[in-house]
Amino acid sequence: MARLFITPREIDFISDLSKEMAKDIIGQKIYFYKVRKDLTDVHEVYEESERKVFNPPVMIDALIDWSQSTVYTGKFGSENKFQITVHLQSRDLLDRKIDPEEGDFFSYGDTFYEIIKSIQDKQVYGQIEHVVGIVLTGKQARKGLIDFVPHGPTSESYSDPGAIQETFIQQRGFVENDEGLTDDVRSLQKKGVLTKPISGPAEVSPKGGDGSKDEIDMIDSAFYADS
Image 1: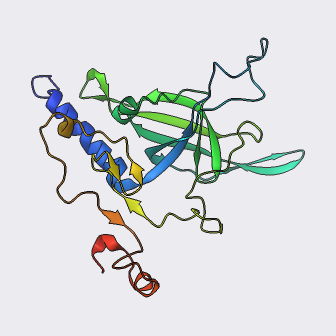
Image 2: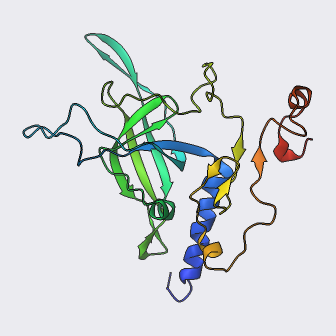
Image 3: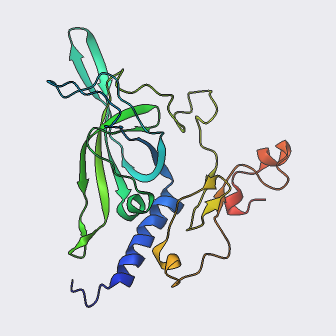
């Protein structure tokens, strides 16, 4: 479509809509582990490293295309291997200065994945400088490549805190919400075209009223005004 009709304002609008879907509606996330190439020793011949050095994990809102595991059978028995596809909002990565590359890692649930493919999604109405998103393909990492305690949510079969996410708080372009800093930037708000929502970020939570146990048991979600 011609640039006459898709101006920077429309590009900002499209970007903000996709951010709203990822950050305020879907609620899926990964934890991204960037490999520090400057601190990791790489073998001169095999160009691999036994022990990698990582930056602290960064939470990124995403859309996950999760697939069933594949069973591989070898001489030592069978094992399940996962491979998933992750869709990230491109301008969100630019705003937060995050650059996922092949060889980096991320966790989703209790599984760690190595990025084996990082590609740009389709262009925004044929404008080469604007991309809808980044698509990552992650293959389950071998044991020993990355050893960290996974961040939740993981599985309701676990009893550790954070295994189940009971609270989801929107971001909506605010610098911070009840969970802390968001690093969320909405282009139309930044340029003064729109003001921040008066109602603030909505919250899905089991708590309501004064937060007492009786009231918590009675309320399914504060988002629906059940209190």
